[in-house]
Length: 317
Image 1: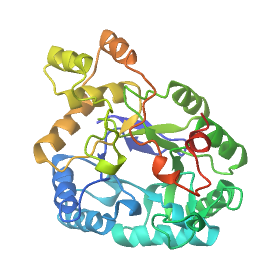
Image 2 (image 1 turned 120 degrees about the vertical axis):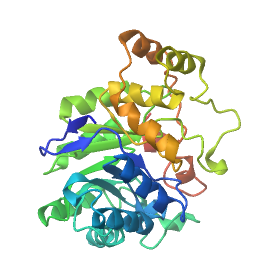
Image 3 (image 1 turned 135 degrees about the horizontal axis):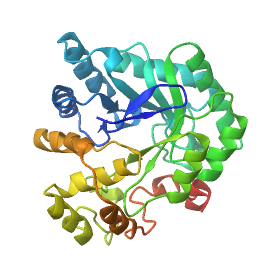
Image 4 (image 1 turned 90 degrees about the horizontal axis):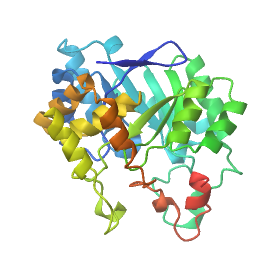
């Protein structure tokens, strides 16, 4: 397994298990299977509504001696309804209780979007809070306090544009360690990668396989698919590997963390094996030509009627 360094001196396993869309009743077995197979990096979030099950699997695996807490890398995220400074530590403590651990390795602001406390997903305009009314810098100060209290070792963000990340860096006492973003050959984010490397911010790629299993309501009827792209298939055949392994090896070859989700034992192991694969320069060049700036997770679910958030102000594009 490769490890990538963070500014704190910690090293994050380059390949982890994503738990978004892993259903209750299924995610427990998937995490147990993943830890037995050798995964040591689990990516979680309260918004996935399965952290308690993930925590049960982790606790049982540690009790059985499969892995120690020090060997595990656990990431979770602050949901949009807990951006108020007095809500941040309680939200983190709830995640720690659900995961049955005393600290997190990494805690991320899930979206640069704020809801009123108690709102899991907005139903009306009044459920939202603007970033003018509740600036990210205020949320970040509360996250910094959680680092200082030993509740989390590293803090960062998800789904931040270069503009939002630059603004945060200018105001932060503790610099963001990570930006977790959608990243795959159809959305290569070269400007973001360049910015993060310049600032010593690591990047995690979510939906590295194209998120074909996300809810139907989040899909477009004409969206492209990655796993059956002819170039991906050709490179996979050339190396005798699966299309998914090809996509993961591409992400790892760009020195980004990848967090594929699976609950299938065979695919869990295939995905983990991708950590030891390397694509050659020709493969990487062919994959580079696939970029089309296409988001599978475009944030349009936050841009409904009456919302202060639009795709333009979310991505700054």
